[in-house]
Length: 113
Ligand code: DGP
Image 1 (cartoon, rainbow, N blue to C red):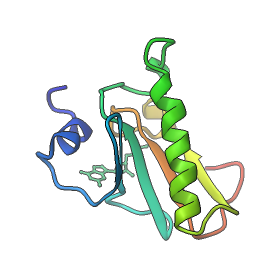
Image 2: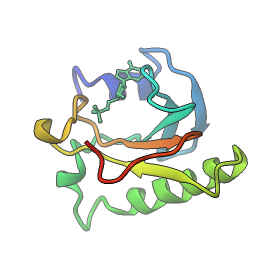
Image 3: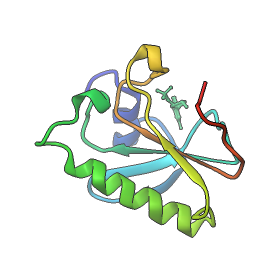
């Protein structure tokens, strides 16, 4: 999609520190880390947000969670990590391409702010 930062990262037009890639999913380090480990997991195909997940495109979401579990285990965070997606401006979504934040390496509070 034109003017989507994460589509440009998928296309290699914007550099990123990739930590995982396959045919449908890309994971890379967040530019502004909020924890010692802060990885973004995205579908390669553009989905605007969690609010646009449908029966037709939802398979990649399950795959993203498989990748998140694999990365957390590989990096030694299987005992405690957080996966979160912000949907809409009022929830803090700033990039309108579905992404899941995988955060680990520190304690987290609940509820989030
Ligand atoms: P959110 O606020 O939930 O939409 O999260 C967007 C995240 O994307 C935020 O933590 C910062 C990150 N981000 C924005 N632009 C870039 C970029 O060009 N590269 C990388 N690696 N991360 C980015």
